[in-house]
Image (tube, rainbow, N blue to C red; front, side, top):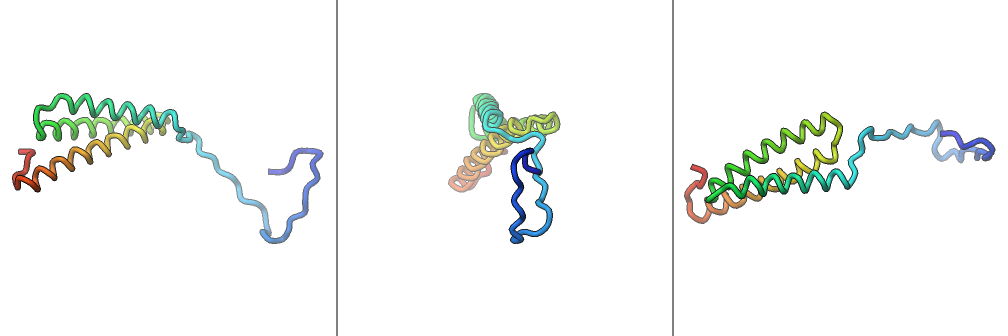
Length: 117
C-alpha cells in the first residue's frame, strides 16, 4: 500500500527485498458478540433438551439429539455468513455432548452396565 500523497517515501533498507506481501482480510470475521450469542443459544438449547430427561439414559439421548440438531443449525449459520454464531453454537453443543458422554462413561465404569440400553 503506497503512502498517502505528500508523505515522503523511505527507500527500502534491503533487508526484505522485493515487493511487500498483500494483506488478506476475512470477508466475515468472527467477533466476540455473535460468538457469545451463539454460545448462550447453544447452552440454552442443551439445557432445555436436558430438562426433558428423567434419568441418565434419557439425558444422554436428549443431549445427543440436541447436539446433532445444533450442529445442523451451525452449518446453516455458516452458509448464511454468521460464522461467529455458528462457532458459538457448535462449541456449546460439542462441550455439552462431551459432558453427557462423560456421565455415561462414569456410570458405565462404576456399575459395569451400559446405561443407554
